[in-house]
Image 1 (cartoon, helix red, strand yellow):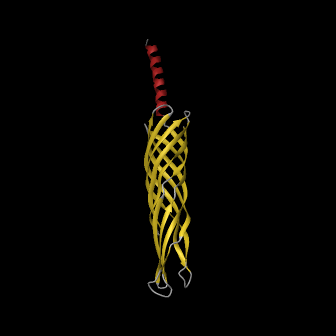
Image 2: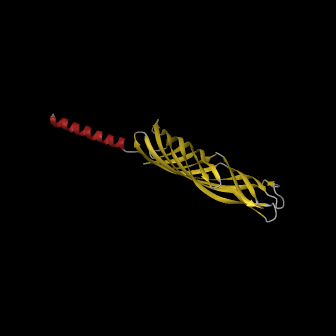
Image 3: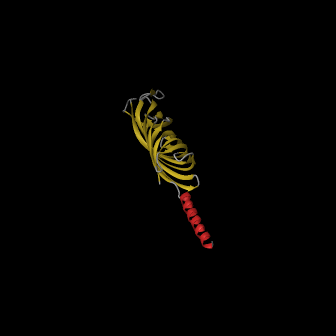
Length: 237
């Protein structure tokens, strides 16, 4: 009898240990996202330089269009339904600048001319790293959702229409573009629906806000990021 109890106890202990190992094995995932950042942005710049003992004033209203966004991500389960995750994403787009410039008269004081050139095709690039804590809710073996929140660090590269030259003795302005960059620190908040085709492979639909702002040379308070939506592939380990 004692021997039988010992054998049964050993079997239950082994089964419990196996079950515990299965439950305690942390979930890990890697993935790829492709989607859109439809948010458009606008910001203004103001610069000047001396000419004819007065000053050329250049005010530019810049716009940035939405575009495609891509990302690679991964996560590691740290406690129950909580996963710590990171994603590297990249985005590129173009925009325009509407310029209003005041050019002094070479012969008479206080008689400037105002010109309004338009500058198309200004390039915007964003490379971002997003950290997040994800809370997973599983409904079936195939379906789960995840809510995420965390900080975002967005490196912005922006082509600006803030500079210009004036031909000597004239009021003819030729605009030039410059490249400026900076890093925006912001926040990301998202919701993701996941469908696992198999125990390991699946797909996702995500919606997310990831944005912030930064100061560029001659361009304060430049917005970056924004609302994002897309599809992704997921691999669990």
